[in-house]
Each structure stands twice: as C-alpha cells, then as structure tokens.
Figure 1 (tube, rainbow, N blue to C red):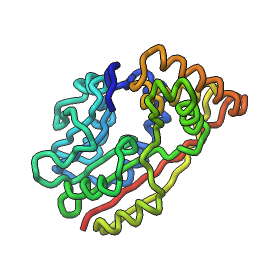
Figure 2 (figure 1 turned 30 degrees about the vertical axis):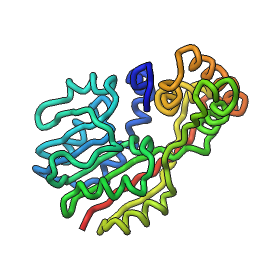
Figure 3 (figure 1 turned 120 degrees about the horizontal axis):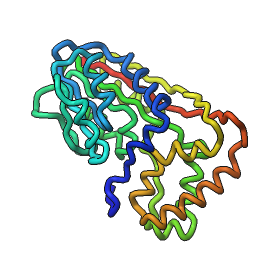
Figure 4 (figure 1 turned 90 degrees about the vertical axis):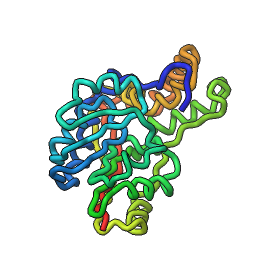
Length: 263
C-alpha cells in the first residue's frame, strides 16, 4: 500500500478489542508443536507482544517478528531480547531469513492482506526445513455487513473518485482450497478449519470501532483525512441502518485456521 499518511495502522485503535483479537492467536498456537532450539518467524507481528508468547511456547532459540508497519514496530522494542528480535519487511516479499530452513512460519491475521495465495503459500513452505511447520490464521468475514457495506460505500461517489476506484477485498480462498493447496505443496500433515468467533459488543456502533482498527485502514491510508472522515460518516450511516439495534450486539466473525507440517 502507498499513502501520504504513513502506513495507516493505529496500534491503540487495533488494541481496543485486545482480548477478542488475541483469542484466535492462541487457538492457532495450540496447533503448533514446540521446536526446542529452533528458528521461528512471526509474519505480521504487529507490536510484538504476542511474538514473545510465540517464542516462549515454541521453546525456540530465535524468533524474528516481521512487520511492514513502522507504527506497530515502534512498540516492539519492549518485547525484544532473550532470543526475540524484530525487523521491518513485507510478507509479499518474504523468502526466508538467511537461506537456512525455518522450523516454524507463523502468520496470525496478516496474510489476508497479501494477494495471490497460489504463489504465496508455496513460497512460504519453501522457507521451511524438513518437518517444519506453517501456521496461518486469516479473517474470513467478507460477507458480513461490516465488510460488505465498506465495499458498497467505496464504490459510491464521491468516495470512488477519492479512492481512485480502489475497493478492498481480503485475499481469502475457501477452507477446502487451502486443504488442497497444502496437500499439493507437500505437507505430510495438515489441520484446516473455519471457526466462528461470536463477539458480544456493547452495541452495533462498536462494529465500526472494530473495523476502524483493521479493515478500514485499507481505505484510510489511501485518502486524505477529510475524504476519509466523509467516507467514515457514510459508512456509519449505512451500516447502522442494516444492523439490528441490539445491546449487547452479537458480532459473528469467521476465521480460517491452517496448520501444516512438511515431510
């Protein structure tokens, strides 16, 4: 993504629903076998707080957190040391660390931002040593109004002009597609599932606060501050007109969890 307003990520906004966003991380981590003394990469590590958890749970000798957001990485220093370090990088260009095989490549809620999973997953698998593990969690909530309405607003004038025709779609295939992909790549074992996380938010307006910390960054960092506020106002009006006015508000959020172990 390109932007005149930085990378668009706001760590404080993202952390507003910390517990809800972290649970899928722990569910994914439960699929990963420890690799005592091994090397682990956390792609899309964010602030790095969960990278430290990943490092300790896998018993790795070295864990490297990779993220392209300068704003997120500025908060990672407090979690560095004792085998954990961080570097700025783009998942779309990641091809390993130094040519030696990795024991675990872990990507929690990050790979959905990268296009062409047909070439991405073989490339990530190629960074693993024999017996290495790939673990991925991706949001798959594109059909919920929280996401569908954003696409509708983005295609309406004047927002379509401000966005240059851009409409954001997560790069997500079906769970069955990933199961087939893992088999073709050469994973000897795999676990693929779709899981629904039912979030109980104070009210429907809190759905807007949720997506402001994730999905809407895809629009925010492509628009001026003034244009984004106009986009957000229209999004709010349209979304609240289709969501039930219930308190607490039930927000079902689908995610795909993937794990595979190479031969």
